[in-house]
Length: 636
Image 1 (cartoon, rainbow, N blue to C red):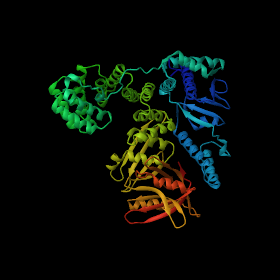
Image 2: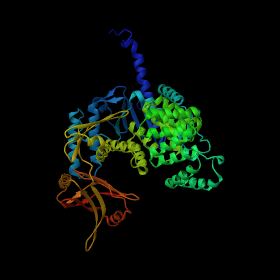
Image 3: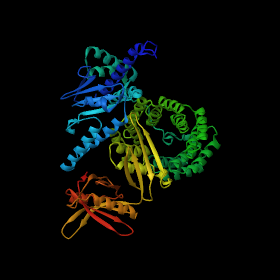
Image 4: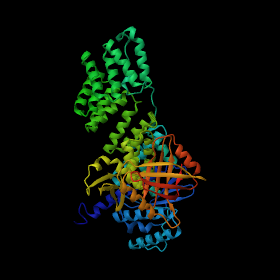
């Protein structure tokens, strides 16, 4: 192709260079927003010392932007203090090298002895040399040097997400599109002047394109139709008024079985469709789905067009797995009453169950129009927009759900998923852990936490991953593998779990192989061992499988030096009714939660713990056991 042709260098040079500058401006906008809530951050300089620079109270970080795939030859030119090298992607060799750099830094700041650290440093220096980085002292790679990736296709979405989250934190609803246009314009102007953009410049833009976030007083804000279904005085006999009050009080206090008993008695005396639906709703809460459907049918015999009976039956049919019939019932209910938030919301849920995301979005938005103080439609809108890849809208609605219902576990887990998708692993981990405190079986949070731990290099993540996929793994033949792919914004995790024998799985992740014991009825306990003269802090791990017991003992012995004290990392976390224990040894990891109790054993352990404890490993059936003196655990 000729250089003078339409697609030749002469005619495309200006366009291509402008694409590079546009990417650079978006990167500067992202980093500005990322540090906006950092108290020491002051401003950003455009083309001052580098492509852009972040100015803090006591330091300056320079950022070099490359609009090409990052490689080792590119980034090694910029190894220096307070430097970030940024690009839309990085190749496999650089990814591997950065992974080794992280492992080297972990070792450098660990409690390993000096000889071990010197040996690791020498190994890393040889690794760098093989990759064309000749550094006599590996400490010449500063801890303040890093490589970052901002994929081009979604960078605008994450910038708008950061804007919307800042707005909600400051009680503002931002027009993120207009804010982004203005921010990019002032960055563009600053480039030619080598200018600086202050924090106040961007907050002024936000205030210009925003409105105050006000949660309206709209009476009852609940999708629980039992709370909103009032019985008309004309529908009941005066002689049963007291029984209605008694049943309502049971319902308010959450005593569902007592409330059901009263309502069933009432329904025998008064043939009311509302009474039947009250009974159906309580039975649904108690998990008696078939009986609940019968009560809905009784209501529909009295009034075949009773909207709430059609809607409740639709939700019950959905629980039995018939999503198509559920949608028909709910659409019929909507035809009778299109102003009830419960009905409109559940039409949206039915569409979501059928994977009709656009229709679901429409109905969740209608629900919010009817009552903007409901958290559930905001939460489900967030889930829909996340699956559609509209992350700024997803974040907005999930944050609104948390404003309306602080600590809502499902919203915390979904917000964690957004953070994890964008690589903000520490923030995601905190959100998943908060969710699991109240809902320990939350699937999104459990799986998300497993991936977070894996990305942070914590071997506990592989155990969590195995537990989350236990149903699929239990059906896996020996020597067969389950492959799990998790796609993020700038990385894709590919993990295989192989069923190697009756006691273990082999997990392979990015060339790292980890053996994970199969979940069994193993137990862990904590307390003290009382002798004639002293009480010793004790942790006991009991195995049901003999091979698992032997593997544990052999691995711990490999970690045991001559002085007979075994070094470990990990923690003992005391909860209100149980204790969480994690012990990471050189060649083995132990993790578990004690049985629920008043935690007397944990408190006794803490009282006599002085930096070391006795670890007793046992096999239940054979009564075999081994004891080890372990040091290095943290107790919270």
